[in-house]
Image (cartoon, rainbow, N blue to C red; front, side, top):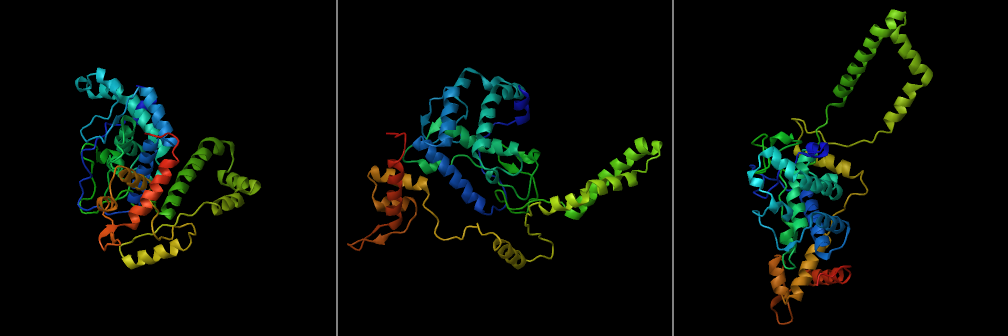
Length: 352
């Protein structure tokens, strides 16, 4: 196994279940995650885009002939080239060596297509293993035209109960995480563990004071040189203190909300409003845009002969009365079908 594969050390990922936690809280990361998986699935179906190019190259390299279906949790996520190897007879080290090149390719794909905010924050290794089920499905299967959303739902990313959980605490077979049992779970909660800045600064100063002092004792004092005076002379003659202040003022500020034992929920909400007011690029809300994957799915179902009522019921959309006072019409269906037809008309590689 190469050094790169050893550093990767990706265990076999599976779809055997969600994280087993006491409570799971929704987050904006969940919506962004689904949006990304929808976009990647759409590129896969349309055979167009940077992700499709990467998948196509992966398929050519591994001689993959994709099946058109939604993979089940029990499907093996390895290319057929491994059919000639009895992986079950191999011990774990040999198994990792044999499958390492495949998971290394999936890891590179992960790093290329998954933005940092949607990687599992616990660690890069955890994120690669978590995403491998979906990415492998994209390489080995093509989404059926009537099950695009089901395909996009393949693969579960683990939620964690709080903060950055060490990779050793993740059980990939059940997607459970060892942490405080009574705390709720979130996928990539907006919680960042920062050390107290004053304590961190004192810690850094201690290290360099000790290094400089030891340099003085070993090499300068025997020559009669006062190390403190030498340091002061360097700082003055080079103007390093002034440059230090200028560089420090240019460090970007990350505004965080510190939740102390006495901090109330109202305090947090008001602090959020204060921080949000300084971010002009923040999304102002309003009606969410049409999901392109849902739009294409609606257009394909319409092409298959589905009426508005059937499509609306599939997506749990409201219906409005038509001219015969029957609840059979849906503006959402009309808008999605129109957008879906536009997307299908503009694809470069027609699937049909």
